[in-house]
Image (cartoon, rainbow, N blue to C red; front, side, top):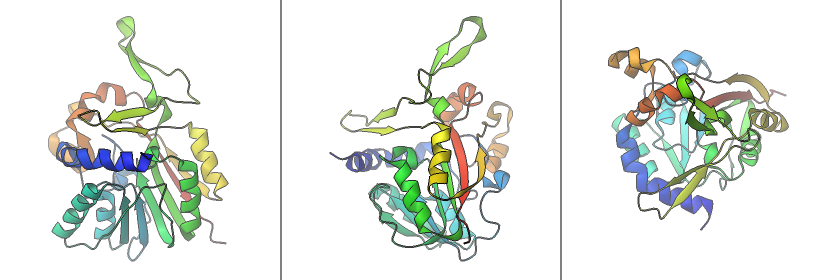
Amino acid sequence: MSSSEDNRNYWDEIASDYQDQTRISCEDYHYGPLVPGDSHYHLLPESLENLDCLELGCGAAQNSIYLASKGANCTALDVSEKQLKAAQSLANDRKLKLNTIQAGIDEFAFEDTYDLIHSSFGLPFADDPELVIEKAAMSLKPGGSLLLSLAHPVFAGEWLEVDEEGEGLFLHDYFNPPADVRFTEDDTVMVRSRAWPISDYVSWVFDANLSLEALIEPQALPVPIMEEDEIKHIIPYDSKIWRQLYSQISKVPVVVIIKANKPLD
């Protein structure tokens, strides 16, 4: 079975539970768990009106739906049929147009051109993220942007108790971080997501002839001392499981955000 088939079967099985257990806002663009959205980082184009946007590994496409609410023409790609059904339902509820494509990220042909290609934690599931970035860069219009939220390599380490000092992180090999292996409840389907050294991410961007505008390692916001209304307003991606991991993700980033641009010439 190919990795795309594994990814499809895995996400089809967990899609309903994932959407039920994770609060993902359509009112802001999310980058990762318990971190601010784009209303804080301001990495999206100032005006989204009539921009052609493509989301890779969209899940239920909350980010694309947010962009569509600002006037963008949005295409959202995911390997999971059930995730795309959830995406279309969210779009229909808001009377927004959303074009969906069922395909694995590695398989997508990138036949059209876009002003913005974006992905929040889709590329860690790709077999060859470097090639995906290369193909995405070729599909950007001159002046277009690539906006990615990727797995941070440090978070791939193992948390250990360190005497009186509390928890510490052990990472055996930064240059070859271990994969995050996930199974379905019946252990019949396994998928891997993985991180790469940050220098690799930057090299892939430069090798694709893009210019690097921003590289951000976001820290989780202090949810234990925040009011629930404040959390819902400021944090677009939240779940009980991630809150239980707050002591860890407040110390090291879960994701690294990269924005790169295609030259006008």
